[in-house]
Image (tube, rainbow, N blue to C red; front, side):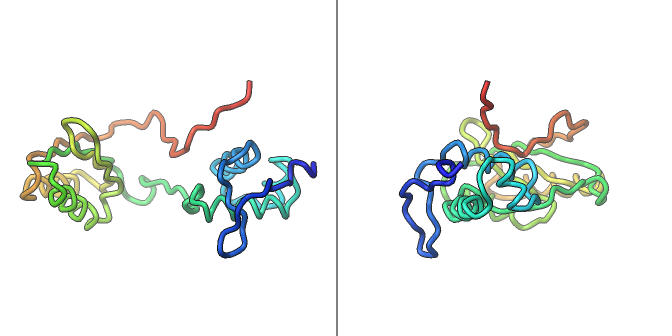
Length: 175
């Protein structure tokens, strides 16, 4: 067990936490367990990954400081909160000039109903995802896109059913 607790001469951050230059199997297990349940106690996490609590906490802090763990949040049920409709929009820009890319990102950032914006390679410049309380709000969301001078067109689609909703990074499992 002590060998599993070793931190292997990793460098220190300014706050004195070891930084993983390469994550090992224990770090991967920590990340997987936290991804599955970010609310578990450090003692429970340590038990699940097979090390004692103090080195487990050091590893979690190192993973946070190194940027492997971006943060913690609750996953909310949008329908229970009044957002009945999920809309996706595929956006074509007039050009991929930096000014046009940044203008679309500013436009997307202005509304709380716009939840996700991803720049894509290929014909479609951006894929947007938003939530809306109803179809009227979707119309407002979609109508605003072509009004932007840098947008050539935005093709909306409504989500009819969610077959999979896993905001997780996949981890290979040992066979």
